[in-house]
Image (cartoon, rainbow, N blue to C red; front, side, top):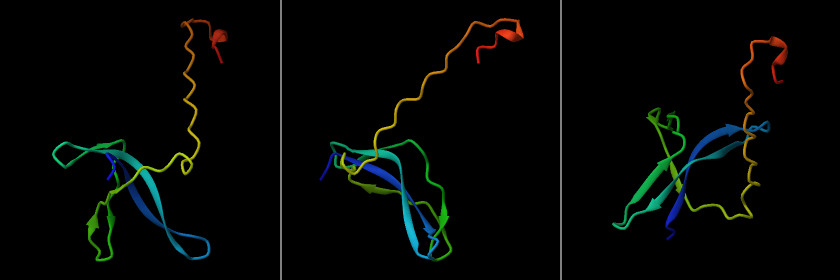
Length: 95
């Protein structure tokens, strides 16, 4: 067993062809603890939904991390906003 797992939220959707599929969104990570449990760190919280019985439930899946070859390319870090000194002259707006 792995020391780290990804936490995933799922949602069902219907394609244009009428086929029902599931989409997965990574919402956090889980790390194995020394006593055999798991420590969960959420980056987002899943939304509750109705199950097949009409009851409200919230589910989170723990799955092994995707391999690098399966992962989409890493996003480039967001460019930091450039700040300019405040000036009362409206013609000096830096954009």
